[in-house]
Length: 298
Image (cartoon, rainbow, N blue to C red; front, side):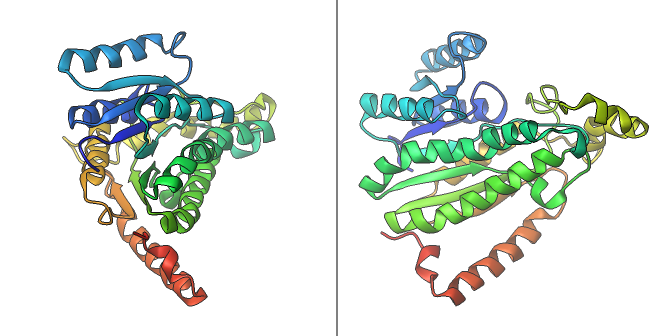
């Protein structure tokens, strides 16, 4: 990614997205940090980012984008193209966490989470890909999760949504590769500090069913602490490490970016699992006769 690249980051109000926006702008890129309600509840976050860019002489901008709205995604991309004439990279980072008993989440609960965590990225792709395909270049970087392998208790809908997010990223990569567009999936492990993930998590909508699981409440209550104890003494999972990895990956020359990268302070072994999984998947795609979809066409 050249120093003049234009980057859109979703979910940049806080956490990984916010840190990544600052870091990429510092590296010389034109960065559009997107978030919902930039004149309302996220006005403070938006102002902080803009001010940080101005203070340091970085090209850090804020754009309104609600990933649950195709119109919002289309408008955000149109605003970027009107201002810069190009969009080189999309960092799919927006996401939300649910904690609770799977049975107690209503169908609307789960549909809402998949709408944000999975379909949201698809909407942004639908907005950005026509431009990238026309230019026959670009990068889609997805902030995934090791959770699709580790699959811990009491996070069921979130696990499902991130697994679907990953699968959609993989299948999309086959098609966009033929238009010169690269895909990278960065998979953070559990991060308990420095984001709004656990603190802002939603609970199941069916309180009556939740009450019937009351004997398990002590287990659910220590979900956050259970993840924190995964780390060795003196070690923590820092979202800055994920932002650093995203920046490293995007700095690599076109055609040399890793398809998948794991950033996991818990050392759960997901990197080994995914390496074997991707190797198996790619071998199957080749057996199907679609080997060309595994290489970015130049």
